[in-house]
Length: 361
Ligand code: FE2
Image (cartoon, rainbow, N blue to C red; front, side):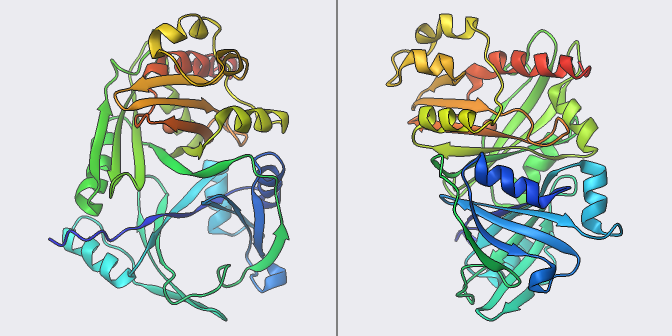
C-alpha cells in the first residue's frame, strides 16, 4: 500500500446551529475570531445562512436554516447546536479517494466540484460517528480566499491568542470506541497513540474509556470516548442523551500563552469549569517546577499535567450551547504531548458538580 499521506490537516469545522448570527457574535466578541465571510439570501443562497470565522489557523463555520423543512433544521431539532462536519484538507482529492477506497472500509461519495469565480473546490464526503461528516476538500484549483457563495465581511475580532486546533474529541456509545478507533486506523491509516481505561479515568461515581488516534505525526488528532459504568451516570452518557447520538464533544484550541488567553476569555464572559482548591495544594509535588506563576494558574482555574516529554496546561469551558454537549478546551503545551491524564480526577469532579446541578447524575 502507498505510504504517501492522503490527508493533510483539519480544514474548516462546520456547526449546525439554531442561530448562526449569535454563534458568530459570540465567537467574534468573546472568543476573538475574525468574521471573514457570510453566505445567505443576499449572496444567492436561499436555504441557509453561514458565517465563516478564523483565528490563527482555526477555521469555523456556523450554519443555520431559514425554512422549517430543512436537513439543517432536522439536525438542530435532534442534536441541538453541534458540529456537523470536520472537513479535512487534501492535496489531491482523486488520490485521497482512491487510497481510501483501496482500504475497503469507507466508501467516499463521488467527487463534487463546487465552482465559483475563483476556480473550483473539489470535495468528497465520508461519514463518521453519529451524523458527523468529514468533507475531504481540495483547494488546488481554487485561488479565492473564501469559498464560492461567500461574500467578504472584514469584521476583525480581537485575537485572544488561539493558534491552531490541537485535537477534536468524539463521544460514541458504550462498547463502540474500538469500532470507531478501527474506522480511523483501518479506513484512514491513523495510528493509535494511547488508550485509557476506566481505571485511569474515573471518580467514585462516573467513568469513561478513551482511545486517541492520530494521522501523519500528530497532524490530525482524534480522541474517541465511550461511557463506562460507574455508580452514577457517565458524563459521556449525559452527552449522548442530550445530543441523541454520538458526536463531537470538544475541540481543543492551542495557545502559546494560556494565562493571557484565559484571562481575556474570562473578561469577555466565557465561562469555564472551576477547579477545587485542593487541586492546587499539592500541585507542585505532582508536576514539579513550572515556568508559570502558580498563583495566577490557581486564580484562573488552569490545570497542569506532566508527562515524559514535558508538561501541559489546560482548561475546559462550560457547554457553549443550551444542551450539556459541545465545549472547548484551551491548551498550552510546554513539551507535554499527552492529554492531561493526571487532571482527569479533578476535572471530572468539577464536571460532576455541574451534572448534579442539571439533575443528571
Ligand atoms: Fe481534550
